[in-house]
Length: 442
Image (cartoon, rainbow, N blue to C red):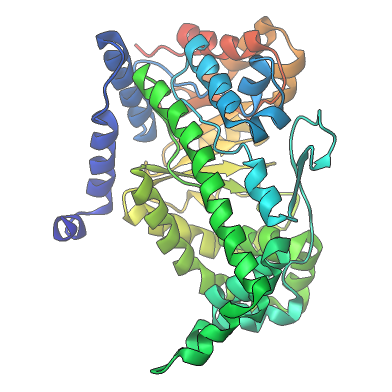
């Protein structure tokens, strides 16, 4: 099988993944559900290939909305996995949609509490119990003088420096010797594991694994129910652009801005070092999940954060290399361009045709269609504010204009500029109605 896969082109590999998507080997709840599933998948595949489907596909940007629609709040589903599954299954059963998005972004609260996770606050843990989202805690989780350590051995840096900083329960891992000190007679290496604090850290990891398995099973139950009812998923994995891995995860916003001016070569060297590792890890994750897509939230590539010159120096080269590495394996990257990408459109044309989905937040959709319409499937960008405060008629009017602007010739998916947490159910339904009424191709 490996030799057969190795002999395929990227297009052939993508086709293999699509064929498995069309025929998942699952037991559907009814013949109509099976038929609807194939129709939905076919519709999406044709949009990705820049062909005309029967109509414009629609991705409902639901976010945490299923929790509130079920009469719950975010804190409840963060800690009660049974309620988590109940809420998402209710949403699946009561909403018409072309794709299904599960609760993968709902934090497993007990996992992170047990590890004393410091990078997030969430309802009941650092935020008010009725907070409707969680919050990232900005910080310099890697010091500027530690670039060399990251570049020399990324895995060792993550294990003995980064993880002990973001998980309080794992601070004792700082006291472990490097794995590269193991030699022919490794007895002395294992002495550190006799320390009570190190043993407690390892126990915390095991406990977190057991708890994470419970959370994952609740998410898988939602997936099974969606598939049974005929709803396909675009998810398969999630990864950040290499620049965002360092900017978000390690250096923070202030730190990365300073680095672009004070230590640009070290930053570029670090980006080059982590990119192939990120490709390898992401492909392995998608394959393990049997997926076809990778969702990529692009946090610091928008027009307001850096100039085009900086984007083309620091952001795009390794980002493109990551995209190409995923595409080589037949994986379709779903590139969520947060903020505005109006100044980036010509740059991001430089990708193989019909190989990605660009989802835009606040980008000019007419410009995106003009510049990218012959190269890539584009998606977007119904504002969250409109879905929260507008009427169904307002939403349908906006969607109709989007379809008329971006839908000609195919290659367009109707969706939101960002996900909805608390909002009006009738406005989500209005998006699907608009796709059915205004998005039909002749």
